Length: 360
Image 1: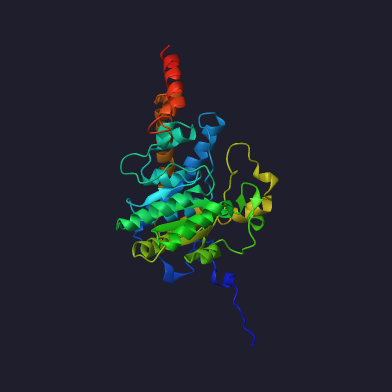
Image 2: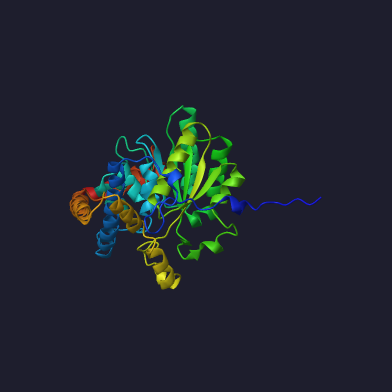
């Protein structure tokens, strides 16, 4: 007797609510957001796009250090964050500074993080997050532990973590989702699939037709979402959060998105591995344009509204960079002092040596 096996890929069709023209194509999935909440979501996306533009300019001026552009990924980043609560814990990758800012990290500290200053990694009281992870995929391991801790303490909160498509090729990715799945940890695993792990196309990262299907091996739920559709990302994340706090286990969300700029400002040239045709194709899917059309049709957004947000963002950025400039410069003793709770002998010796140098 022959058995017909259904391919797992067929179960991972992309979830979408708004199409490229800003029209609702999935009314049943529309999230319950008030007009004010819809406008606030747009405000955050516009603000973050301006922040990205100004951060790139500041980097080129030598006023910021490491920076990973975010334009194109606003729906993925902010749609997911908008579904969170203040008590939820964020474990970001290095491109996920916007989520930290909207979670409560002051803008000047985000700039200090870019400069490598230790204060940029110190989360204020009440901001439940770790500083951005530079090691690819390591945050997945950490999220599994944080999520399990929340479950064991009976907290109605989740740990959410982010990585890119390249991060799913790391061992930490598999270990993290497997551990979280085995213990039904309160976790949401976001994979922001922007098509390229720096310069390596997703097709060369894995044979799998979707990254969402990798959830199957860990025994957790998985879904692929249109990452340029902020309402779809919000709805998927809210669903994942509700499942997790109800004890139904973690969820893996793959958002199909695109970064319009380079991987980072550290010399990456996307024209060497991406075509202008591909860029043009994704520009038509711009998450801000799509959501703007949706709101304009509902008479909820105008050019005046947008310009107000743009000026607000520019003003905030100007003040924040001045505050970062005024903050005390990091010293070698600061760096050594924050490495361990109890310094080993060799670092104690170095600490004394640098204290003497700094006092002169």
